Length: 84
Image (cartoon, rainbow, N blue to C red; front, side, top):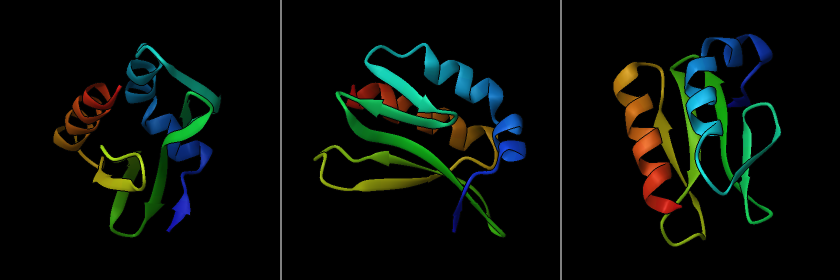
């Protein structure tokens, strides 16, 4: 699974714009968000779809969320908000 390409990030722009409004998140490069200097959220693509890795509640690992479709994108935003 590779990091999301610029073209893929273009398709996710409305989601990225919403994530940019969340307090504490800093977008160091397009689609790669940090919280308190630590990687918090980034995107991948593969033949199965588009995925986001968001730091889990323990802060030790990442949870992968399918963001290919709108329900997954809503889940990602809610998960990110809950962890901030």
